[in-house]
Length: 521
Image (tube, rainbow, N blue to C red; front, side, top):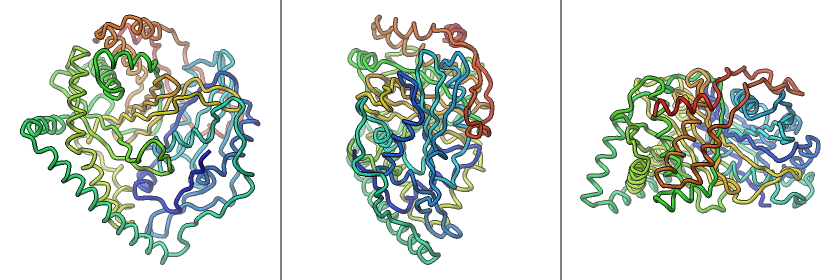
């Protein structure tokens, strides 16, 4: 297992997630992982303790510099206690998906305690069929989606028997420490600004090169059209409202072989297919709320990893963002897939992600106090029109099974943070032959997010029908018609772990939603 060695100071991108966070915007990435058996709590804690030396950041806290003169730094937590990070919970009967989704929503509503290392794990038992679950969170300042997946692979095992730690956990190697004085903080601030200027220059040269490479009359006209559509897609959707901090979480999953069959039949990438399914589901959701989708676009922003190859799983955030405007009034699924393909490819060729990276590098080149002031005040400003409608992130996960103390992980539903006026966020992750989708929503802005989830299932069935994949349609239709029981509240063994997490309203069953989906299609 490779040791993830971090730097002592946060990058500007990492620090931004600390500055932006408040109770209305919990900024942690997370996942609900389901296993084929109950997780023995003591054995699991022991297995994590034995591997903590592989991820030193898990035993470090964030230290803010005086007056924000420099960027925050990481320092060893002198009071680290693993039992302050791993908790045990039990679901009430029947222990189904509804109960687990509700529990996850309450946990995702709370902020991580910054006086401790920025992660926690809830080991959940009481699931039906003898299954077990783990709900884990880590702050976005600690990792992005790709590095978060890398940490997950370190903390779990690739075989049921597990593997021995590379060395005794008690033999800690010296770790770098951050600045201890105002002078050091100022020095780090100057150094960070210089590094930001160099990065800004590189991003600018890259963006100019992209523009020069795309000097083609036809492409220029297509790009102008796309940019016009992107500028026009600033209308608020029903869930684009100021968020409250209370969250609801639900999920869906597709067989990766089904997506591959669609891709081979009609073309497109996995991400294109996900965007088709999501956009058509959003169209249904908008109509369900009494609004028209004619001549309306949805602006979806897709995070883009800047890591150099799949082996680069270091800590921190190395991402840019690719905005794309997609029409919601394209009725034919195949035509919609062609539309998505053309738009995403054109935006990639245009260097849109480089332009966003250019903006990030410009911010990184400003002095640290200015960055803190900028990011800290941004969430308090609600613009008349939204910058985007939602974020949809797609992260490749492990293609092979993972295990926790001998229990095989059979599902892993990802969560991407949302907030400000983005009432819904979508995260997608592949794992062991399946594609898992997690929808996080503000409980006030989008209390019926489970309907959007079922619209996604219905939209994928329609896409399969259009691609003439009857076997795939049958599997999706079976999932759609599976009845769920009303949500019940989890009963924790350690009430302190979830005492501050608010209750969430119960929503309608997928069967009721599916019936409505047919009406609003």
